[in-house]
Image 1 (tube, rainbow, N blue to C red):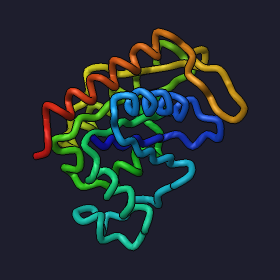
Image 2: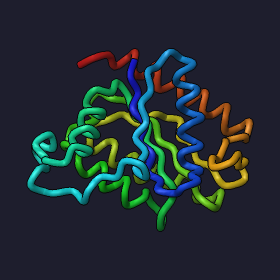
Image 3: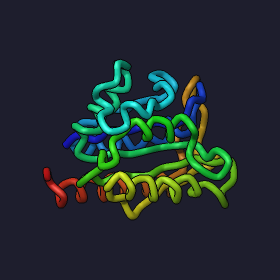
Length: 185
């Protein structure tokens, strides 16, 4: 079972990356093969509408690799910081490189990070619409975090809130069950 994680943060020390790292560990404990695309380390160019219907035809090697990773995944997880009430621009741009049915028959876990607890899942709400538009199935469990859920360890943010870690386990189990139920189309 292959799961593709997309990190929509470009921060050098990223809470979103820390959140996805915790999810990765949970998924690996379920026997999943997990690949992570960090948009800070592997940025994508601005979407070129010329390749909207055939993104595989783009001359950009990173875009082709990103599109292929989504295609090969049995399920996905998308993590983003909250930017002005929604997902980050680099994440939206990355998703714009995909075909309109890129998530068909794929479950997608949604995770976000914000500075305020009241708003920490706002980006997930926007991502749900994008997932549906790409014909994916968002998991019921969504995860939103704030700064107090982490501790800094050298150049990384490590999730240390027991309640959030329990939700990570619930979300990873749900994603694995959905992948099993949906099977290969």
